[in-house]
Amino acid sequence: MGDDIDTIDNDHRSGIRPGMVQPVLLGRNKLLHRWLGPVEGLKRQLATDMAGIFMLSLTQKMLMLVASILLARLMRPHNYGVYAAIMAAVTLVGVPASLGLPILAVREMAAYRACKEWALMKGVLIRSIQIMSGPLLLLALLIWMLEPWFSRSSDFNVTLIWTAFTLLLLTQFGALRGAILRGLHHVILGLAPEMVIAPLILIFGIGTWTLCIHTPLTPLIAVLMRLGGASAAFLIGGVWLWRRLPAPMQEVSARYQTAHWPAAVGPLALVSSLSVVTAQTDVVMLTVLKGPTAAGIYQVASRGAELVAFAVTISSLALQPTLARLHVAGELQRLRRVAMRTAWIMFSGALCAAIVFIVAGQTLLVHIFGSSYTPAALPLGILSGGWVLITVFGPGRDTLLMTGGERVVALIVVLSSIANVILNLLLIPMAGPEGAAVSTAASLVGCQLGYALGVYKRLGIRVMIA
Image 1 (cartoon, rainbow, N blue to C red):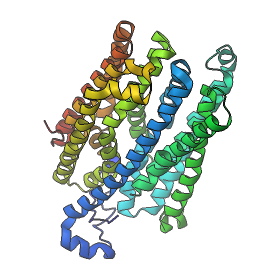
Image 2 (tube, helix red, strand yellow):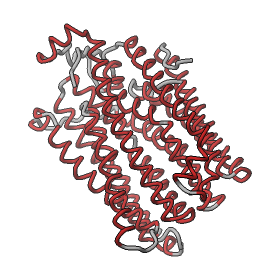
Image 3 (spheres, rainbow, N blue to C red):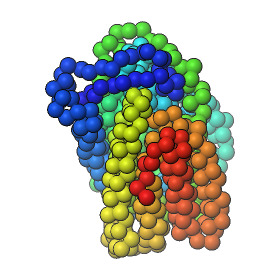
Image 4 (cartoon, rainbow, N blue to C red):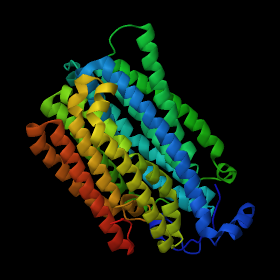
């Protein structure tokens, strides 16, 4: 990936001091810069990242779809609902435990890399690991204290909970490692272990169990298979990170410029936590209010809707380091052009996928998951339509997070999460999975509109296509 001219101005949100760095142009890219100019160089980098993420995401979606189909068929709705609930709980607990550090790490590493501040980059790596360890230790203590309560549950027993905690541990540090690599502009390597290696191991485990064991697949065995995939991804990703750390960074002593972290970590942790709450509340509340069967049916619809969100995921992961770099350089109009072009890509991809699911969703569910999951057709259509509306408002969340607007995002997410919980409480008892789908889609669309308006008010630029 080529490096463009990085013009750095004073930006306290990124932790960069005035006069820290001058425009830098690496010699190996000088001719490319003369031919293409900085905009074209940026286009080429984004195109490379997005093409790579497209292939990774497509592979991941296909692998996870296959895994979901196999698990749904082998476990039936009740056990699959228990598995879906425990995985939703891992996600819900994990995000606040990360304290927003993966997002902060992307921003800090991208800024310090542009400045060639190797000692500060090393400080980000060390300090983020230290800080993330604290909440995980407290969570382990809490689980130990609650063991007698878990032992009374037939579905969520102590062994299952500790297995899920181990999975959470590897997932958290894997996310941080991926964020560090993305901040170093090794976007593909930062994502590949969790996107490809982990689901491959999961499918291999399911296949081996089916062919060799010939006993029913329980939620505990399914989570253990997820743990095996996470372990392999963690080890391989760690090796990749070690080999891609810049040589000067490995040679210097770490320096810590973390005085601005508390002001950023709080909003970022809140944003990450409540974003996941909005995405996972439906499954958890369905389990509580309607039982595991309804949650299992809804989980199938949610998995299908993830394919509609495919373009959004690709664009977000590729765009974040570039947004941080352009903001640090003060190139807001260039940032606006990149964001709006990305919005159109997101919209086009989501619309094509949504049309397929809305028109032929029931047929696809019957042939792929089986007739037991036919009721998932309507929730699938609702969620698919919601994702199309979300893309209309562009990459507002990423733009705010990568330009120091985490407080604005936090306020919007708080309001959206409250609305999501209230809507779920009102609609799930009346409409079950369909009510959960309406609640989630409505809260996500409102949230995205708020992001777009926040970008316009804060930066004076428009990132939405309408």
